[in-house]
Amino acid sequence: MNEQRRQILQMLAEGKITADEAERLIDALEREQPESPSGATPRLKPRPKYLRVVVSSEDNFGGDGPGRVNVRVPLQLLRAGVRLTSLIPAQALTQVNAELSKSGVPIDLTQLKPQHIEELIEQLDDVTIDVDQPDAKVQVFCE
Amino acid sequence: MIPQLVTVRRRRRDGRWSRLFVPVLPVLLVLSPLLLLAVLVALVACLVFRVSAVGALRGTGQLLCALPGTRFEIEHGRTAVSVSVR
Image 1 (cartoon, rainbow over the protein chains, first blue to last red):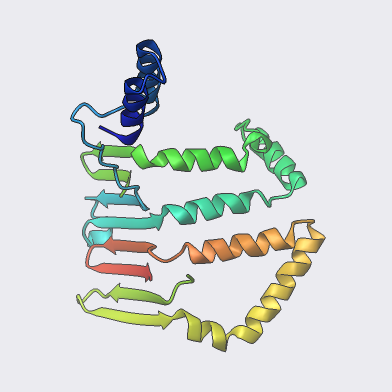
Image 2 (image 1 turned 180 degrees about the vertical axis):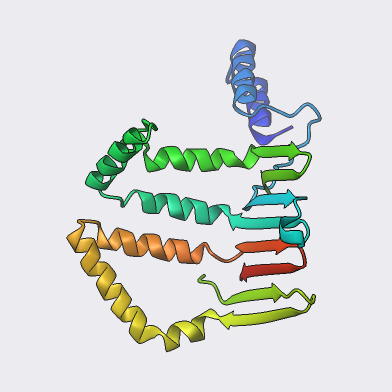
């Protein structure tokens, strides 16, 4: 029994509050601190620190054999890079937008705020991308 | 914490590995006159392009501090290159 519940029952026993009030208080307490079904505190999943990109190719380029690329980038580095993008001047973004439109990619980069990209990186934790082809395999995941 | 050691490893066609260890801080100290010049040029560029110089410095510092743990490995047949930042 936790301390707050004990205090409520103590006040009920002393007649300071009615049974209805005690019930309401205990309900409010349970809403505030939902217990896990097993009664134990839930184990927190460790936050991933790295973004891994693994590319394996069975192609025999120039008779050298298969190729493999393994990249591990700290998520902190992605965050730092995203913060740097906020320094790009507005006129440069306008020029980039115009060039993108000319190339058939109508994306307005001025609408892409750093906090949006940061949120995107925060949610990267659960992302796992697997692309399997007979001669190549691409995996993107966080670890 | 800025990176302390960059390790570049290369596997040749004969399967032999060659390693190059680059201690970052001593190299930065040796290159400090050039770095100072580069920082000055960057500050002038920030003023010309109306970019916050403080923000740029802070951003670059954060980028540098986030580098440890980065690893690139590229294998192609019997040759391979690996760059690791610690």
